[in-house]
Amino acid sequence: MSDFQPQIVAFCCTHCAYNAADLAGSLRIQYPSALKIVQVLCSGRVDVLHILRPTSEQELIPFVRFEEVDATNLDFDDASFDVVSCQFGVMFFPDKDRSYREVHRVLKPGGAYVFNVWDSWETNPFAQVAHEVVEEFFPEDPPGFYKIPFGYHDADEIEAAVLQAGFSRATIEHVPLTSKIPSANNFAKGAIFGNPLYDEIITRGGDPQEILVAMTEAIDKRLGAEMPLQALFIHASKD
Image (cartoon, one colour):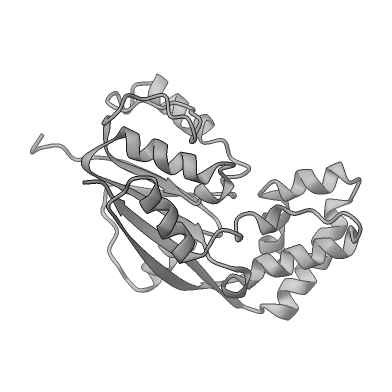
């Protein structure tokens, strides 16, 4: 294995990981030569299995297996993994406490659970802008998508839940970032068409293109050429 040189393909969400990669490039941080970054829409609209399954079937990564599983009912034996990671997913789980217990169960002693969640609207104002724009079109029944990803950010609550699940300790770091907005229109397209908000609009009989115009104007006026972003990174350890 000493000669092993992994080839890494990173599928990065336009408004999440890709921004971090773009910032690293601006700071002249050297990427490994084996790393290839592919920019995609929000993972809420891109099924990861559509990307990974062909790779597995063609045996391009023969030692990796891809499976779709329930995060609150992991179909794996106890003490199966050294590390479990989850990127911007925990806030969507219907039973977060159970998901923590399941991860703790499948981790080996000495293992780690590494995951992240978005911080509040106050530290991620684009989400509040997007919600308020859509709310103007549906005042009686506003789509609630943007409340979910940014509604699970209390560090004390998260730490308590992780420890209650059996983890011995947890460290939580708030990570701020300033992201550029080269095009308000492109950003608005991602905010509407790149996640489940689009489905909520269609279900209510709305016109996504009409909302796109309003959101473009709001982003340009309220955010301008750049915006703050902030997430919480959590590292939970199992003895």
